[in-house]
Length: 156
Image 1 (spheres, rainbow, N blue to C red):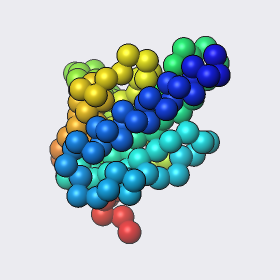
Image 2 (image 1 turned 90 degrees about the vertical axis):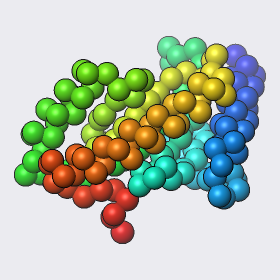
Image 3 (image 1 turned 90 degrees about the horizontal axis):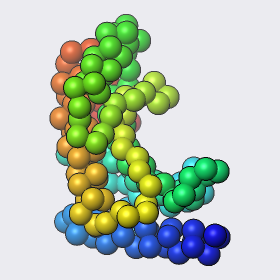
């Protein structure tokens, strides 16, 4: 199992870097690599005003494949508008966001998609990266206008 897991991780790393290379980034793909908390592999890129991070980690107990997580932190929550914001995020999730969802992590609104790497192909990966980035880039401004807070891209 360890060998097949390592092979699957190697395949997924190559796939991520191939897709990133095809996105027309102005930096070398190697320049998108970042440290991954808890090991694994990670990359970061900018899509409009939204940063997008891609994390690849080995499978945990009960999982049959390494996992890919694409996250865009978009808004630092204003405590004064948090309750209304959280309700709006749940409503947006329920309306359907085509494979992505909103969440809150460390007082920041995030757009997130997660899936196993088994059966992942370039078209599916590119879609997830573009979708997370597009939703993040769209909603960082509209959520800030409605509920306050600070766009993560504006934090220094």
